Image 1 (cartoon, rainbow, N blue to C red):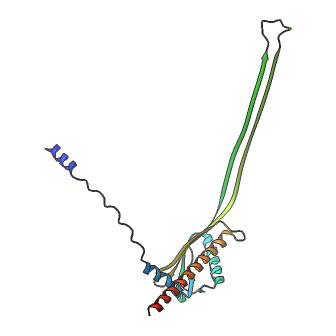
Image 2: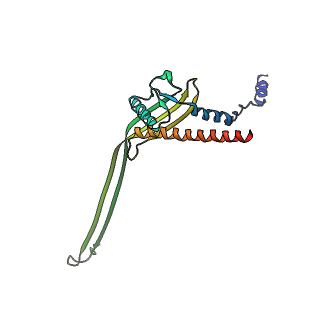
Image 3: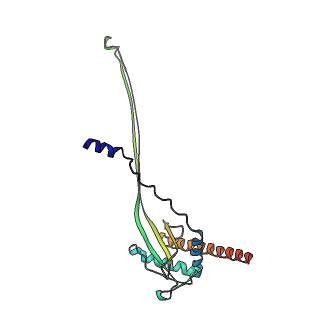
Length: 210
């Protein structure tokens, strides 16, 4: 009886886990609305960045870079800001080590011996040997900087209007921290320009319809 019950349970169709639902495609109207809200930002407060002692230095560099670009009015009073720049940043110092070892070795030998049955005057022997050995080891240790910043622009009601993640190991005339701050600003400039183009296109289409 028990065996029959177990067999019946085994023969029941096994329930398979439901496949995950496909991710919903992004709503283009929502993306456009979020992009256009960037153009409404006039005054920005750059909040403290998390990420260790170097985060404060990168924050100062981001402020200087944004101020130089004249994108917004930067304020030290959060109560007057339209949006807040928040996130994390870090400048890591590490040692990049490279090592290699190469070796070359060659050995050759040759010998000629006389017949031992001959007389002593006829016995002759020759021997030649060559041995070459060479080994070369290289180890290079280089101290490097790698700065990263992941920041977002948040409206007063908590909506994320823009975000970016940038990293740098330094540029030709800038250190890693300064370069990553400049990359954040350049990305924001590009996205603001795209928002202006989008607004211009939408306004043009609206005029045609009217």
